[in-house]
Length: 244
Image: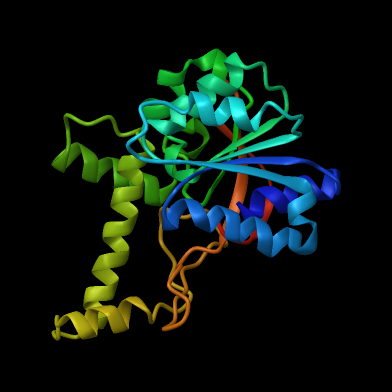
């Protein structure tokens, strides 16, 4: 959320934001991130509405949010609500910038089910290398990932970004366990999970490293923006510091 807002403000300092967010800690982080960036301007520039994970649709929330003019829509959503937010924004004729959460940026599971026409132009942030990018066919990290998938999950689609995310996090967890040095108590595992120092991962974009501490539990604080062109994500700009 911070990365998206920082990007928008560079072009339009007075932009009006509409934020749909899940009514839990995940969703409320989007509101906290917006307030961190906008500060005293938050109330004047943001209109926000929440939904419950038990809600059948986002229709009423989206209609409420977009009933007033907005330059930017930010969807702090999970699961099926990713495709719902894309479809409803399109159906309501929203023409502004639409940022979706990194966790619902899967082409196979979210964007194509929402409809390629509806999803074209949607924006998101990423920290992972694009497993579907033919230009990265020779990347050593992605080659190792594809070999792993071929051996252990041959029935799965290797270009599914959720699989790549799972592979990446498994590698991080392996590193945490190695740092435990044989002591796998909960206390030690948590201590080492909060003790990552400039950890590199072959699935991350160049320049992005993992860092945690006892007071900072979010390992990834650098992102790159990307735009869906109807077939795949196209990255643009440089690496930006901030939260999801």
